[in-house]
Image (cartoon, rainbow, N blue to C red; front, top):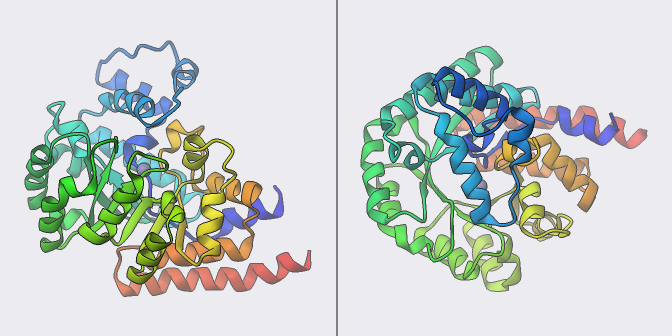
Length: 345
Ligand SMILES: [Zn+2]
């Protein structure tokens, strides 16, 4: 393994932008389909993976939503989150905040309680078995109505101690942040932390970023690349201390050949950049380490840059200060023990 890959592998990390439904690997999909007596329209794992061909956000989402239909019972949701946390614990992720989209499931007749209880069980078992800490962020599917989102918000309230934050994802076209302003206002009142997707190069993206920062008052933006086009948005993000959860593979998918200039420019401008995997099961199996390696290969991120990224992620995490101190302690010890030996090579 090249030294930088080794450095990334050992780096203490947090992942803050990953969709649990997007971590459902083809192998597990077949396993769950068999358990739930469902037929999949693919002969095997290889044929299923070969079908993951998309060229923009809507075509990606079609494949993504089909995949989730094997998730029916508490044990399925438990297995989903457990598999993801097991995988990233092996990549030295110490803490993860994971998105889930309850509407994908409740609209198919799966009770909210089944989703949240299965996910919670998987989280707790992964912490017991691998020591990895995690929390859940509930996302609203933005192309559905604000009423539909409000209905699922109400369903979530009895479980709010199991959910740290609210997010907004899926098809952004004609679905601006302001459409959900009332839900996010109520969410803040109920104690949820707030984030939202502003995907790369979407229609009206600058206005969406402005609304997310100024109307909704998010603490983080998921992606948010187009902020770089407008000095006034950069200034607003700086003033409010907004964090960015950027995903290298998704950047290249949305803007082929961009060579991680989004991540590089954010870092160089002193914006609060974090690096993440988004939907690794649908993105050539690239989890957080492989995404970081892309930032190295395409935009020359080095050890100091990755330490800055991890530091940002621990600062951005919605955790208590004891855990934050512990995570920073692991990172600073790693920095001390690895940077000088690397430089000497
Ligand atoms: Zn995402």
